Length: 315
Image (cartoon, rainbow, N blue to C red; front, top):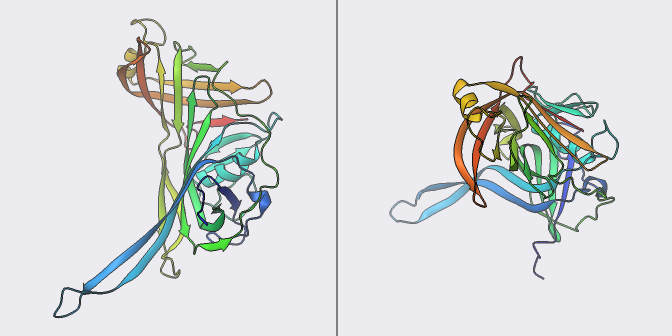
């Protein structure tokens, strides 16, 4: 029987035994409306020199074994202000973020085994493909928040981890898929330096995590876990162009290297999700066009004052 690619279920669970040690994924760990799921192995192959006296090669050697997992989910809240939704409490700690009562901040601390909101953590992640299970352990990742006017706001996730043997496993049925609809990019509030930019179509923010695989000769895969070793949060927005002197005067502020408070808030009437960045700085502005109207394609970086304070995401 062929495997239909659309028939996929994503599972993810924080590791509680040891970093990089698989935990058992159950139906309750598959409660994600995940889209465009792609899992790929990155298995090194080392060729060996040709047999003496011929052009033929000796048997190769399989080397280090890692993998990547990319997928998208929708942005929505829990239905209770100050309480994070399940996707956030599972996935964000593995992207180097920590929570304080519904508010998430970046952290430079390494992951630990602890079921608390004050630590970054690693995940065991699996994709069930209508009879196959492909699994990674010791996963950490990155995420981009993508806002497009009138459309559901999407979260684009990218994880790395240690590849595990593919198994024949029945597809799990999620125990309780999310019922809340995603928040769309409309009735939004955005301000930069206290001023709302002219009409914009898109806004994007990437955590900009730097990911490595921790090499370890004690393991048969050659790796211990993935690890976040750096962060450079950046993004874009594209307002309609305005004349010089009209706030926000983007070109003047760009040349001056001005840092400003950036706030982006979206709501569905029940949940409000707010990004707050105290030191947003324009890195580049290029001309753009949208249905005949000139726009400014603005790239920005989020800077820090004291460390781990570039931005917050508040539910």
